[in-house]
Amino acid sequence: MSALGPDSIPVPGSADGALPPPQLDDLRIALRPPELPAPAPHDALTAAHRVMDLLHAERYRDAMVLAEHFAERTRTQSGPTTARDRLELLRVRLLASVLVGSGEPCEQAAAELVTHLRRSGHRAQAAATATVLLESGPSWRREARTAALGTAAQAPKPSGRRRGERTQVTAELLAVVRGMQSPALRGHTDRAGGESDPSLHWGQADPRSEVRLLRAALEALPTVKDQLLGDPEPLLMVRLAQALEAVGDPAAATTLALDVLERMDEGPEAAADPQRARTSANALLARTLGEAHPVLASHHAVDALLSLRTVDDPPLRIGLITDLLQALMRAELPVHASFTAGRLLSLQRTLRRDAHRTAPLLAVAAQRISAERYDAAWVPLEQARLIARQERDRRAGMEAARLAASIHERTDDARAQLVELRQVAASAHWLADDLATSGPERSRMVLTELQAQSLVMRRAMDLEETTLALSAAAQVERRTRPDGGRPVLPAELLWDHRVDALVGRFITLGAAAGRGEEDVDPDDVEQCRREALQAIDAMPAGHDARARYWAAYLDERHAALLAERGEREQAQKAARRAHRGWLAIDAQEDAQRVAQLVDRLAGN
View 1 (cartoon, rainbow, N blue to C red):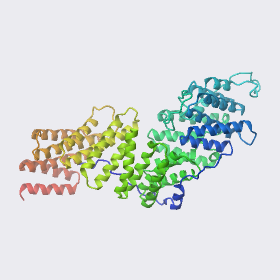
View 2 (view 1 turned 135 degrees about the vertical axis):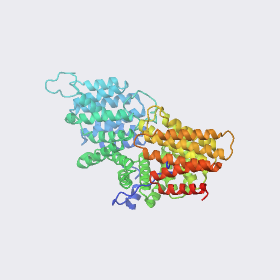
View 3 (view 1 turned 90 degrees about the vertical axis):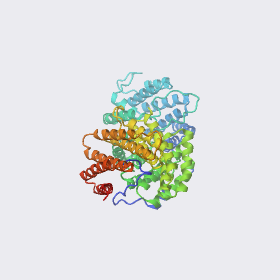
View 4 (view 1 turned 180 degrees about the vertical axis):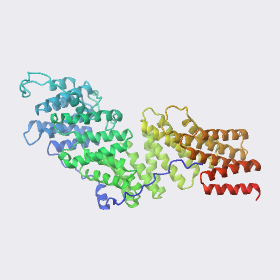
């Protein structure tokens, strides 16, 4: 039968040419816990950094208290604070007030942000910001509108401007300001007095909408740059890269992230980077380069971790170490991977939410499996499986089942492996049909389901579990039927899986008939063979060679089945057809095997 089916664990890639792996000394430094307590902020910019770090760590109220303190301090005290630095502080203060969910502080934060822009001479940006905030929800409507209009007493009037006159805002400026706004602010509704929904964090916006919005912002940016306080280009670029990754375009995301790093190396943006654009770009590259260039990906992960030495952000830190471990395994660096896995297993305990622990636990389990430490792998694996059940996380549960199946395969426990493979297939089926699953993700889930069902069919055949084998074949047949709606995988791949399932069903029924199982009619076996032949003949254009392979394989299995029944003459005819088929595609080893069968059947 075909070799289709998922590998038990990810196949490690080769090293990236002459690029050396990260030095172990750098790795040890990168994997240390953060230097705590973190240095106390001393100005508006370092406070903005710290507030953003607290928000990423989901410490919303701590972030709010710090932001309010420094906003008041920079408001009442004279000092060297620049308009740009205070703007960064007021932006993160507004975000903190939204995530805490307080009504009046939201209004005040929005008003002060807009007022600061207007007083610093950026009236158009102030008006655009107020407009975008009003689009986001009603909770700050009065304050933001008042601040946007302004009065002569609040700010100097440009020559010719009448008191209270509205500032004209172009569509290009609105596009840029919308892109600059945090995704957490879009669609905000008032939750006055209540705690913020803990699930409201980065990455919750629809990535397809984010791609459109951010592309529009970057296209409009050159025409309005002189109207803006600060340069938002690195932030817009890294957010677009993240959105492109989320919609399944890692190549474009990688290119943008590399552009972000190159641009920030050429300018002063690295110093004024409260959104961690540089760290985000390195983190993205650690993910998107992990498959093809794992050594390079590991360097980006280490760079990102080294930039977080004084940052107490466990979700970001643990996520980066998880990506680092996966890259090191793909790069076949067992010493580096073993050390990283040990640190990750320890550091993941610092995460506040159990839902964040499944990915690192599963990564550690995968490393233990690759090192053939199966008993050690079960501990993090079962911890991740328990959390996945409690959180109803089907993706994590599916990955746990896949790793468990790998352990059982390596320890020759076919029945236990069958149980886990059925769980993988069921989870992938559910996720593929979930309306919340994106298009690219649905394609991956359908492929995972087909591959898992293919393995279920094979293991069930080995264990003579006829019902399970036929059920798995039927699941594949339903998912790959030609009239199954809009295809999410290439036609040739769906066809190959369909033929694989129909050939498997023929072999399963033939073996069951040979064992004398009840409810198995020899006529059904022949009908299955004909259906498999029909499916082979329905090959997509350009796949004649694959179809000839399947036809030869089916003839060989048919010959073996007829020989077991004692139908030697018919078996010889089928064997000769198979022999000609293997020779036609230059499969000499297969042809030689069938030639021996022909000789045995002929009594030679």
